[in-house]
Amino acid sequence: MTHHRPVLTGLALGLGLSVLALPAFAADLEEPARQDFPELAVDEAKPDWTVTVGGGALYAPAFLGSDKMKVLPVPYVAVNWRDTVLLDPKGLTVNALDTYGFRAGPVLRYSMGRDTKDDRKTLNGLGDLAPTLDAGGFIAYEPLPWLEAAVELRRSVLKLKDSRDKSLNRFGLNEKIKAAEGWTGDFTLGVKAPPLLDHRLMLGAAAKATWFDESYMRSVFGVSAAQSGRSGLKTFRPSGGIASVGISADATYLLTEKAAFTLTGSYDRLVGEAAKSPIVTGSRGSKNQYSVGAFVTYRFGG
Image (cartoon, rainbow, N blue to C red; front, side, top):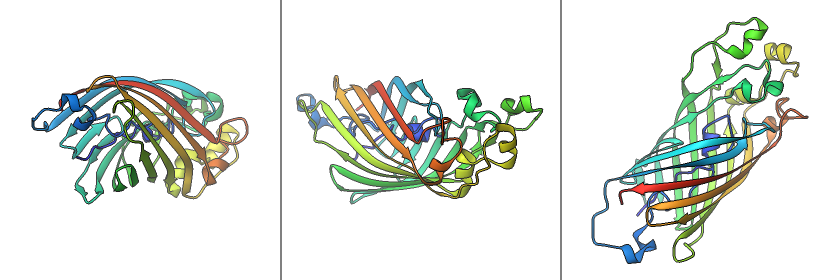
């Protein structure tokens, strides 16, 4: 049976410009395998639907490149239909292809954007970035039960906020809020350990890299001539490329067959053009982006 991993280590980056990672739940958090609980195994058909609910908190950078940390309450709701369609905090994933260790299909993701209020000193004059809906696709290959490599590419397709940018009012401007536009990509290589402690403890880890095209890189890390005049930062027109590399890890303990407690951690290092941005260099930001989190979930069905 294939178990989709709700990769919460990507959520913080997936939630876009607010943080880099909401670490991944172990493989069976969404739907623990029956063999993990042999004493509970019964002859019954697996239900088409499972719903997992819960919540927790994430301690992470205020925005991508920030050196300021904040606590984010994170509600968790995931709906799984036949291990084919998954709706979770990252967005929608469809396993349209699932055969011989390969999975592939379309995805929809939510990107939170960036708010000047999170760090007025650094972001003053740059303007807010609106949340967006990003669409794309993924392909993953699992050559071994404990190893999976995946690539996901997305493009922002819909700006979810179209109001005036209040952060620019002090400069006498009445402009609409802008959004990060362009292509982004995530590349991950994940591993998981065999279940421990009577099949109740699951451990996972991943190495990852994130890529931005030129348009997206300039939206997030660039400084235009107008922004430079307002903020005092040097003009910066980055090209596209790898924006960050990092690692993540998670530990999930199954309290019961349906309830789980998860601890997560992630570290990402901004590299290339992203690391050269005036938003990041000096005392304004940081190339080192890390997050830690804790979550409790309960699964209905299955």
